[in-house]
Length: 560
Ligand code: ARG
Image (tube, rainbow, N blue to C red; front, side, top):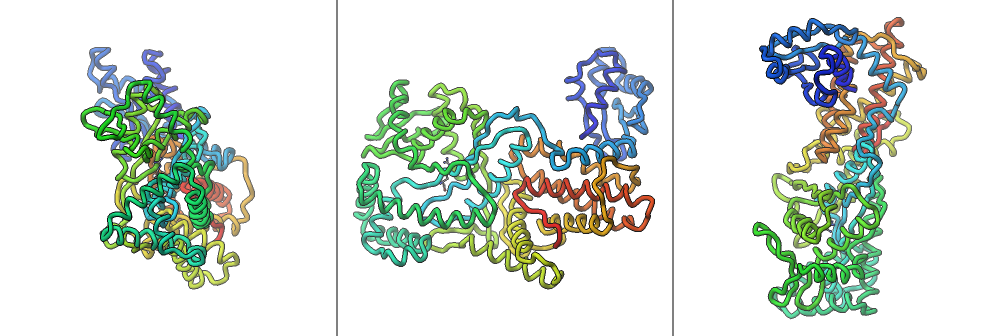
């Protein structure tokens, strides 16, 4: 709710229909300072039309405006500034939330079209990295936001389950592996083998040829290679599922790279038909515009590449889902890959490539440095999240030992802290990993927002709030809370259009701060006359906080 439409209604009347609604809607601005009003209409264009000064037009318009929605209208510097009538507006906003509940802010801008979201997409037999965590958390939130925007999201986990590294892993396993040990601790053990392979290959480069040989066998369907690969894949997936379960994240498709094995010949054929394939040092490539290196499609030994599989996947997704948009939530370091991918599809004549977007993000740093998985030095994410949950539990035991659902709440707060810490930053920024910062109850953290929600819930319990249909007149102190509540639909719009969940996180902080300030200055339950009206506000805040948290992939505990 932003009352722009209402302002436009008034302007259409005042201007006798001389400018169109859509045009007017685009012209309305937010004044730079709050004391200049809630909305502003610039008169510079009309000034040209009428050959008058903008200010004199602003004065004329201001004089003609008369509606209970505005309590003041001013002409300043060529703008018509309007001040919303707080009581009227508050009532309208609260009534809308009361009737729509968690549907409040739902948009229809996506027209029910499909958006595919490729996110998380970890690599089999390797640890789930911090980068994959970012992709998982950002992608999941974008899927939820897309839905709220009116799209139908399809969540795809494009598992890294194919490629030369599996040839290497098979070689390593056959030389040094042990079935029991892998079963006991699959990711750690497989990583060890992989690292060992690289160390040995430095001394003995022939190992690399062996690795390539085994990958070729895998691509050709060799039984031994395939069954080892299946096994590695199963073990890894089990580990990844634990993490997804912890975070409450699900996917619609787990089609990874291997799924496209039998779909690549067709891609190569189409490329040939369209005369796009060229030979270069025995390999097959597609030449791209000058600023992009050629895209490698087939190596000289006939094996395919990451890019080939992504081409097949893009075409498959368009044919299967007829997506309006296709998003790839993948780190900055793959920017070139996606540029090449989109450019090849463009060359192939697929106009739908225009709906494809790479959504990059920065790194997670530890003490200012990149957290690396190389050389087997890994941070195991499951352990990190377990630790966050444990710390949250300690906190609860200290602050609220009487709480009944301690473990459940600790889980919600611990995972929520990790998620919020990531999403409150604009995704392109690097973030410093610090459990201590994440779990603080004050400042801009997940627990702070969750705690505010729990506080609202507790007020409703204490005040014996009954679902009401209509908002009552609320005091002026509530205005900052109302303006925050009222911006929610716009925030959702911006969050999707910028593929930027941090908009929602920042909004939640702002709403929480406004509400906590109100809570500190107004005795909500003490004044019998005002109590019902105030509880309605508390209820509205609770609904919107919960919905905002949900859009980030977080739970909203009733008690904390
Ligand atoms: N498995 C890849 C990695 O970990 C990410 C895959 C992203 N998705 C894609 N369609 N390429 O780097």
